[in-house]
Image (cartoon, rainbow, N blue to C red; front, side, top):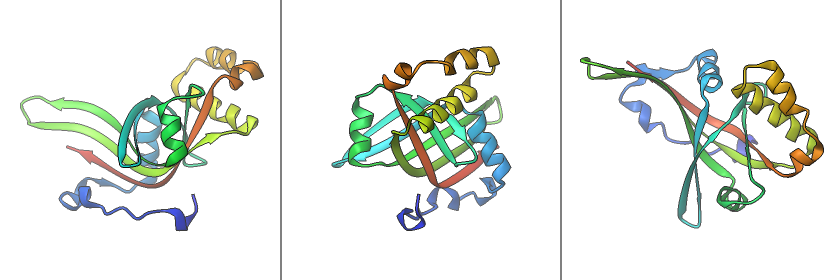
Length: 169
């Protein structure tokens, strides 16, 4: 995402508790690497849409990869407005009798695009499968799929433009 395309988002959710804000990039990467699901919000023509998807995090590109069917509501929204807001939560559970919750969360804004280049599509699926599946043989079997396998799905890439992270407790 180009710098001029980034929208500076007010940091209201941090103003009450700046002590909870996470600045350490290593911790931010851990939140993104440890998560399994990302909740993505989209909007077009003043109509909101939210969807939860499994993902893979590419720390080199600061991007998340997803896969989906060749047509559907999320693709309709992305084609009309590629700007999205998303969140990943690392829920460490409620602290019973302490009226507190242990968590880390990332809220981020960026641009979602449909990957069209075949090598990048394969790269995105490799990132996604490696993020979710730890067994190497299973990963290898999935990634050896034919060109037809990649042609029946879409791979999406969310380029993170701005991120705010915090932790509770």
